[in-house]
Structures are given as structure tokens and as C-alpha cells.
Amino acid sequence: MTGEKKQGAEVRLEGVAKRYGKVMAVKPLDLVVAPGSLVTLLGPSGCGKTTLLRMIAGLERVSEGRILIGGGDVTDLSAGERNVSMVFQSYALFPHMSVRENVAFGLVSEGMAKAQAHAKAEEAVATVGLAGLGDRLPSELSGGQQQRVAVARALVLEPDVLLFDEPLSNLDARLRRSMREEIRDLQKRLGVTVVYVTHDQSEALAVSDTIVVMNAAEIAQVGTPRELYEEPANVFVATFMGEANHVRGTIETVRDGMAQVRLDTALIEMPARELGEGPVDVVIRPEAVRLQPEDEANGLAATVLTATYMGAHAEYNLETPVGRLFAVAPEADALRKPGDRISLGFGRRGIMLVKP
Image (cartoon, rainbow, N blue to C red; front, side, top):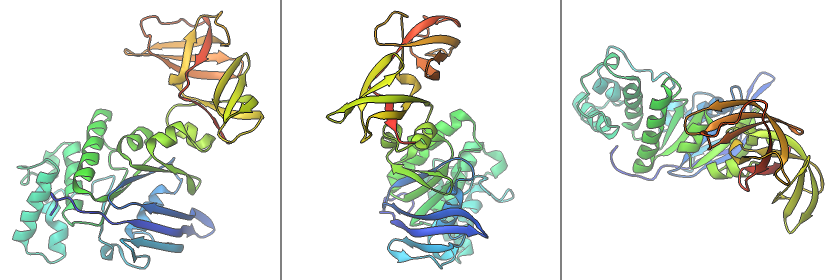
């Protein structure tokens, strides 16, 4: 049952699109979610990620294309015929029902005897770490506990696919961190296929096997968290996946797949990524910036605009000939001061060439 690991179902989208009148909410796209994996749809508000999730759930009809779950075409099936469960942002718990009754509600609605449904509900409640709380009302639970009840209610139906729509957005930062770890652990333990929508990049990096970055109603890039962070396909993905500085540089030479890139007085070697000589977009992660003495050779001249002590590290805004840069430095004890003139170097990781 809910405590046993089973192989989740593959989700396959073939040319799926959604149109509202003349507006394309989701442009035609193809996507495969591997069985038993956790795939996150990530992107800014209005990019189409929630609409795509609702089409998988059967809550929105596709305008074109096909949706297959476990190899079966479910495009024209209702939500109740797809064997998928969805955890909503609002949790949508019945306030007058106990935890046990909330979790058992779907089973009872499907015609299962109440005693059997309640027994399965208790098992699901235990699976999400709430054993012994079956008699409580939602109002007697914390936000994190209510979120777990919503997950248990979805799991008890033993879905082929579990869908999450911004499930942690109502929780504070510390609780979000612990809950995303619990969701990831639960998904791995049960082997269920999960499609997870969020606009939070750190959340996506923490929970995902694969991230689908969406922008302007289409897929910008699909990859593992490491691929998207370290090898973004374009400027949008690079700047959306965590903090990033975007500047323009010049590729002076390319040899054996490595480019010599000029940033004003600094000459930096990095993978060419199939780009040729000439002007180029450069993305620099804040942690790749190295603060150096002003007279350091081959450095980029900079002036400290702001310096913020953050405990374990310091954050800087810097003015340079190629534009303003944001940097994170570990030496918080030796804090630079606004107005200090320094030189910048760059680590080998965290600086990359990208396409526009």
C-alpha cells in the first residue's frame, strides 16, 4: 500500500498545447517524465507551468496534442479516470473533518467501506509521519502538518502520478526547507512519479531529478539541477537559475574547445561551448568572483559600492568597466568598505559563456 515502493508510471506529452482564444497559455511541446522520477516545472508567473500541470491532471483540456500516462492515452479522460492525485497550494482540507476523515474522503467517495477507508487512511497518515494524529482537526495542526495531511490524502489513492502545485508557498523559509526534504525522501521511498510546480529555484534544485525551465509558454531547457546551474542553454535560464551577473565580453581566440574571453583588462579562459570569436554573453555566479588587491595582475578593476556582513559570508555590489557585479565572498571577517578600489579575479567554476 502507501508504505510499499512501487514503480510509478511514465508521463509523456506529445505536442501538447493550451489556447485560450487567441492567447497561447502553453505552446506545443514534448516532454517525457521517467517512471519513478521527480520532475519540476519551474518558471516565473505566467510562463504556463501550472496550466501544464492542470492538463496532466485532467483539470484543463488540451487544445492540441496527446497526454499518455503509463503508455495509455488519457487525453480525453476526466481527472477522475486518470489515476493521478494532486496536492494543491491551499491544501484544501475540510475544516470540520478529522485528519483521518480528510485522508479517507477520496476512498469513501469511491465507494469503499468507511472502516476499510479509515484503516488505509491511518496507514497513509503514518507514512507521512503523523501517526497518532488521526483524530485531530486541521485547525489543531501546524502548517507543515496540514501539508502532510494533504500529501497523505493524495497518496492513499495509490496514484500512478502525484502532482504538486506550489505545495510549500504558504510555509515559512525554515519549514519549507524541511518539508521539501521530506517530500523528496517520501518520493524516493515510495517510487511514485511526481510532477512538481514551483517558482522557487532553490526548491527545484533541492528536490528534482530533472528540472523543466519554462518561459513565455514554452520550454527553455530541460536538464538535471547541475546541468541547468552549470551549463545553462541561454541567458534566461542562466539568470533564472539562482543569482547571476550577466555581462558582455569578447572571445579573442578559440583553441581545442577553450575560449580566451576578454572582460576589459581581464583575460579569462573558459569552455567555448561551440561559440566563435567576437562579442559574447558571459554569466558570472556571485560565488565565482574573487576579491583581490588593486594591483593584482590580469584582474578586472572594481570599486566597492556596498558591503554587507551576512555572518558566514559577505555580499558585495561592485562597479566595474563591464557593469555592476554582485559577489559573495567567504572572508566576512575582513570586510571591504564602500569606496575601496580592488581587482577582481574569477574562479574556474561559475563563469560561463551562454547564448542570448
